[in-house]
Length: 420
Image (cartoon, rainbow, N blue to C red):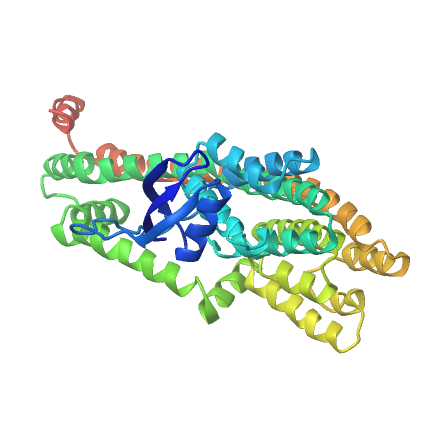
C-alpha cells in the first residue's frame, strides 16, 4: 500500500505532520479522522531513489503456529466484548511475527475505511484461507462472530496438530536417510578407490575380481567423475523443481495424488487425515451457518488431495440438483461407511455439525495410530537399507581379500594404505 504525507489539525488546534500508510487517499483521510485529527492536506508520498524491495516466494505466508495463536486470542477478546478494531490493534502489537503484523496493519486500515472483517481478511489469501474467511463472514452475518471465532480457533489448532504429528513422524527417518547417503558418498569417493587399488595389488593380475566388487568399483569411479558431481549439483535439483511444478496443479497433481492413494500405508494415512480434516472443517462451517453447498466446496479446497477434492465437488453438484449429501458421499470410494452413516444421522436429526464433529474426533485419533504404524515400519526399513549398503561394501572388500593368494602379512601391510 502507498504512503501518504498529511497535515492535520489536532483537537487542541495544533498542526501535526506525518506519513500514513493506506490503501487509498480516502482510507487515509478516514484513518486520520478516526484518530481525532482534522485532515488539511493529504497527498501521496513521492518515492525517492530506487525501490530495492524484493518480494520473495512465500513472503506473505503466515506461519500456522502464529495464526493459531492469533485466532485463539482474537476469539477470547471478542467473546469478552472487546471491539474488533481494538482487539486487532492489541494483537498486532503483541505478535512476534513481522509478517502477521504487516497483514494486521492493512486489515485494520481497511476496517477503518469501512470494510467488514471478512472482506479485509479476504485481501490477504496468503495469510487467511477461504475456510477462515467464509467462517468469519458467516459469523458476521449471523451475529455470532465470537462463537465462530472459537470454533475456528479449535479447528486451526486441530489442523495444525495433525500436520505437526505427520512432520514429526518423518524427522527421524529423514535424518537417518540423510546421514546414510552422506556416509555412502564418503565411502564411495574416498575409501573404496583406495580399496580398489589394494585389491588390484593383492590379486597381482592373476585372478579376476568378483562381479559384485567390480560393480562397486565401477560405481565408485563414476561418482568421482565431474559429470556425476555436476549432475548432483545441477540436474537433480532441476528435476526436483520440475517434478514439484508438475505435481502442483492440474493433471500432474491429480496423477501424483492418485499414485499416493495406491501405496498401502500411505493410502491409510492420507484417507484418515483427509477425513479428519473434512469432518472438522465441514462441522465448523455448518455450525457457523454456511450453506451446505458452500461448506462442501470450501472444505474440498482444504482437503489437500486432488482425488478426494474432486469427489467432494462431484457431491456438491449432485446436492445442488436435489440429492442428499450422505447418499452421494456413500458412492465415493475414499470415504469410509461410518462417515456417510453418521452424516445421514446428522441430516435426519438436523444436527449435522455436532454429529460430524464426533467423526472428526474419531479420525483424529485414527491419524495418531496411522502415524505410529508408519513410523514403526519406516525405522526398521531405513536401518535395513543402511545395513545393506554397509554389508555390500564389506562383502565386496573382504571377499577378494579372503580369496587372494598372498600371505596374511601382505594383507596387513596393505590395509593401512586405506587411510594413510
